[in-house]
Amino acid sequence: MLRRDLLRGSAMAALAGPLAGPAVAQGAKVIIHVPQANLTSLDPVWTTAVVTRNAAHLLFETLYARDERLNPHPQMVEGHRVEEGGRRWTMKLRDGLRFHDGEPVRARDCVASLKRWMVRDPVGQTIAARLDALEAPDDRTLVWRLSKPFASLPYALAKTQPSPVIMPERLALTDPHRQVAEVVGSGPFRWVADEYVPGSRGVFAKFDRYSPRQEPVSHAAGGYQVKVDRVEWRTMPDAATAVNALINGEVDWLDQPLPDLLGLLRRARGVTVGEIDNYGTFGALRMNHLHGACANPGVRRAMLAAIDQVTMMTAVMGEDRSLFRAPVGFFLPGTPSASDAGMAAVTQPRSVDEVKAMLREAGYAGERIVLMHPTDQTSYNAMCSVAVDAWRKVGLNIDDQAMDWGTVVQRRTSMEPLEKGDWSVFPSGLPAAEYRDPLFATSVRTNGRAAWFGWPEDAQLEAARDRWIDSGDEAEMKRLDREIQARAFEVVPFIPLGQYLPPSAWRRNLRGILKGPVPVFWNVEKG
Image (cartoon, rainbow, N blue to C red; front, side, top):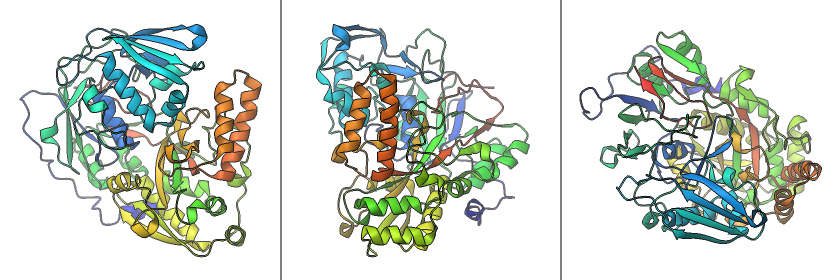
């Protein structure tokens, strides 16, 4: 019902008009893609926004990349050599790497890029804490000298969000807490800055000087063979307009069509509806742990207790249970780190009176809670609508502030208190593929102001995570998995809402679309 309300005012029977765009060379092959959100930032280190992550895969490369099954493979490097009991890693860049500005990729570019990433990313911070030095003895060689072994280094360097992308040293020296001023990568597509129209269009052109690997491609690993001239992203906040544009052949690919419209798309001639991201997304509500009522762990526990995950996921994805999993804890269902520890918090519903009692015990006195509510994201809009209703029923003073997702991405970086106009809660879609163990489940980190937006801090949870990373004993790691999840339900670094698996839709003349957690545009042909 919530999602149907989102469609009111959209003329379902009206067909979208022709989409205006710049003239392109006659005969050029162009994929017109509708992303799941407006593209407001192109710096995948500065923000974890999914739409920025997806754009980064066209523009940048990483030293390692993951295949369809999430196994890491060398991408920008030829490989690595491990010495000194796992404390020294030597990597050599493959030949022919070149940035979009024409300059060759050098090891010092990689050093600067990785150091910038390590400031912002929780996995990068873990590496930095074990790093004695990262050196570039020549233009093609990187040497990692670690204080203790870190066997997951290739997997970490293949991370997708935030991604350890490589950019020129001159850009990588930008303060990690500021966006880079220019978009220059070494990926198979380059950014066409003069055709960018904020809120409307972004253009990626084939990089003619890109030199692909020779191995077969599997998602982000292997040889990126670009088979089109351009990829154009068209922002379409109205779901019905986007669907009609696909049916009419005016666009080629919808990243995440609204679930209520999947039936219409499945009946449409020339359209395919299918799963690309076979890992999906963890829905989450992230609280500000520095200021206001949400800095109180008792209030956070009550906010979690007020949320029913099945209701939440039904609002996001509809009645089809194949499109979501709920209830979930802090790790991906079915993975080794998932357990039943603390799960009573989400499997045993609390009554309104019980949650009100929890709030009284926490000392909540009606303080204002500012929810940043992005109305241009259908899934986040549904999450926020359900949360507002549930929280107001238990007596929370919710200041429900409607805005677009781009504003959320910009505003959530602020650590200012509420009286200066800042925030308490925002919704997020966490990459479920990363939530398989304590190392990569980065939003479970509680390292204070070095943590992801919200900045939770809990020494006990951090210590258990460190022991997990350093342990080589499977039984001990399983015990720590349970300890970490149980403690997370006490601290509540974020409120887990469920795992959802939104399908994509595309014209049938697109062939070669690869499965994986990020939509990629290499290997795709347009007939």
